[in-house]
Length: 95
Image (cartoon, rainbow, N blue to C red):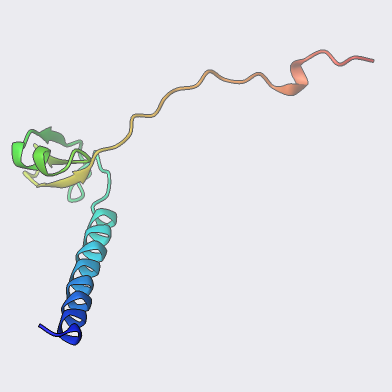
């Protein structure tokens, strides 16, 4: 194999890798974090799928008991509740 053929092969494999990276990023952005069904807006329940858990820890499969929709969803990060801050005006002002 000549240097030219090797360079062409490297460029083509790099373009295939770039395409896979772009498809993965766009796919990750398309799958949104949902708790409600996109069809009937009722709460959904997560279903344990071992193949999906092995594939990625940031996705889960969800099912709607009302309309029987099922599909992938990104796992949502639980919101930490912070204690309310006191207003600055409530402090005594030095005079």
